[in-house]
Image (tube, rainbow, N blue to C red):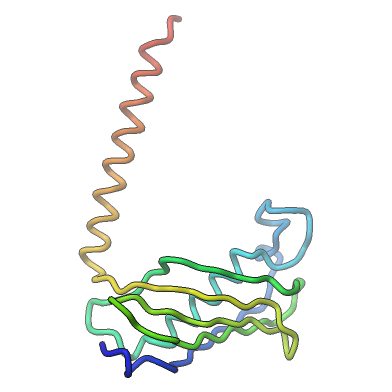
Length: 150
């Protein structure tokens, strides 16, 4: 993919806020407003939508960094919309400018970077890293358990 292909590409995503999407439901705080992690997920979806047509077979993108500035809150039943505009592509890393609105009211802005990965090798690496991490945890638990005198 070439930078000139994706610069300016725009993606959109929308959601209706449900009770399970709120900060209180997710244990973040006691407010029944959309959780920041739901906002992040929505803008990531908009970023993916912006460049989906430019991906090669077997290729996808994953978020490598995110910066969100939450400007307001939205409650259950509200509809919010995210837009993402691709600002550039450098060394297989895409940079997006994102916004979230509830009607005309700005809820959040930010910058998201996503890097290209090949699906199969990425998932193989994740599986291997998970096995190694689980094995290390199991080994540490055995050491702890063997040190206890019952």
